[in-house]
Image (cartoon, rainbow, N blue to C red; front, side, top):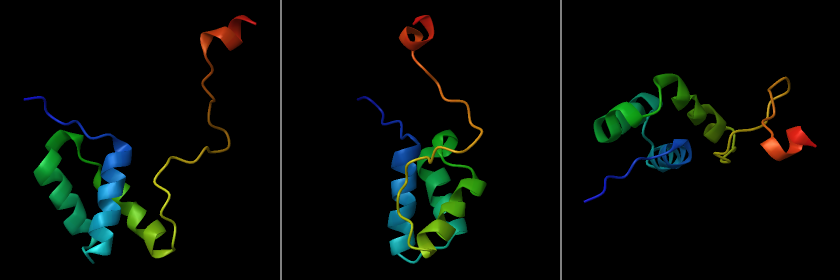
Amino acid sequence: MPSFEPNKRHLRELLIYFFNLKKSAVEAHRLLVEAHSEAALSERSCEWFQKFKNGEFDVEDKERSGSVRRRGIGSIIE
């Protein structure tokens, strides 16, 4: 049976689920570690709870200023 490897988005969506269940960020982190061990988000990543409290529920990474944009090899060759 293939095992499921959650990505960041899956784990962040679980954080929304735990947030809606009124779990604390610490409890949510403990549950993620219990279920997904090494694949779990860091305790620091559970700072997403603050975003949820502010009404921000977009779990995608935002592009940050100063970050390097990755381009495909085709755009480099042109």
